Image (tube, rainbow, N blue to C red):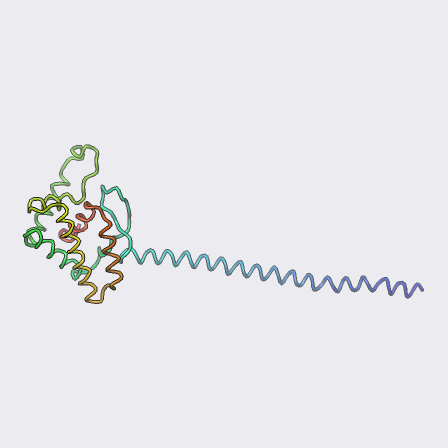
Length: 204
């Protein structure tokens, strides 16, 4: 009786020991699986952040964000669309604006450069605390040539459209990118639009 009792008494202990081993192994396997999943998630997050950073960097020279000039209240730090584009883009802009002002490209360039030099030599106190209009030189030139502000804006947007069309024709810009640029230009206030066109002539 004592033998049978001892055998029967040890059987449950042996069975519990055998059952506990797979549970320990399964817990280790689960912990390892969770660790691996956590690592995959971390790598995915880092890769996504890096992709976002690269995509934002590539858009700054293309069709995307806009830089605004000093003194403009909109703020911004990205390069405006087309800023670093070749002469293919800027030549039609210069030609169209000059024709609309009834001047040559050289005459417009000279007058804008002179106005730029004059504005930099003007004391800040004369501005009475308000930021200077970055496109004031273009507005003044247009008024001298008999154009209203509305006519100037139409002329500048038409010139920018021709610049975009030239880039599309040469395969350097897609039609969608050109349309996106024009949407950006249309959203600008007059001072920023003037400032951008002034850059076509002075490079500043």
